Length: 378
Image 1 (cartoon, rainbow, N blue to C red):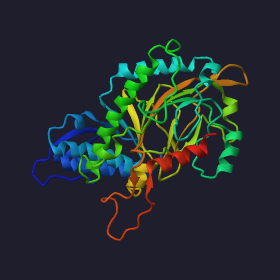
Image 2: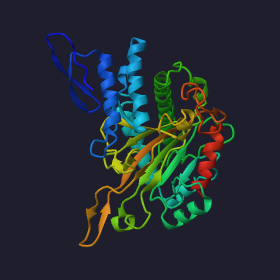
Image 3: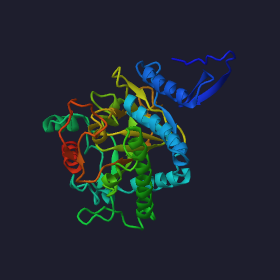
Image 4: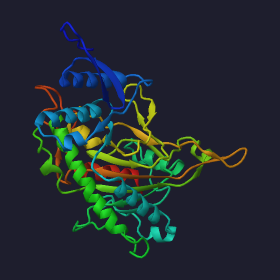
């Protein structure tokens, strides 16, 4: 609802928020905030008005008071409550940095398959190395036989390179030779650290928005048990993608706390509307990062925050003959943020009322993620 001032004279001003504008009548900033948060909850109930909120993170990064931080924190938490996804702009990572990472990723995937195959992913506990086309099928199923059949019938049409923390004493990253892709290792390790720092800042905002101390998650995510995934979707005949069950990446949720997704301009990411169960495009917006909540954050919050299904479908294809068309190549980079390996994921103290059931049994990060990876890859 719109709150109208009871003063004799009512003045109007325009407020821009999350990609839309509205007119408000002499409202305080807190009332405006309540109105915009309520509007998102209303908008996502219909496919025609569904939107992923666009949030200016510079307001949190430069905030000079707790109330300023709280305003952005509420926007972020509300986005994860209602949609499970947000766009983050003015996040602090320079465009030049992101462009350079995309460049090095493209150079890696241009290597001959026999060179990339020497770096093949081998163990879900390590979760490092190259995964060739046809080896993975992401899905929500937990049945090993069902996943195997899906993978055989309609594997995800993508190749990836998985990179973890480089100082791990047990599991080692699998790097190409320096002369094969000069600067690849240095670029990815610097980007890994940059993404971890942004993840930490966003988790601080989430803590505030969930009525926790800002530092609540600090000692639960500092080990950097994350995964940097470079993705390459080669051109593919449209006819192949239209086969039953086939997709560039099947419908799935992510496993950890947050995923930071860097898209190119091609598009193809779709997000399920939690209310209608229909998929909606997450159109690339220059300068933004798409961020979604993962399974472990949903479990931590007792499903107060949503881990939303999403998929990658074919963008518009280019005609190559009267009967055939080919989709363009697509690149993306995902940084899968995880709690520490041994962190106990159990219902947060502010995410259940007295006597309310906790939906999930406690689980460690490692137990959950290794279990999911073991099922989706072979």
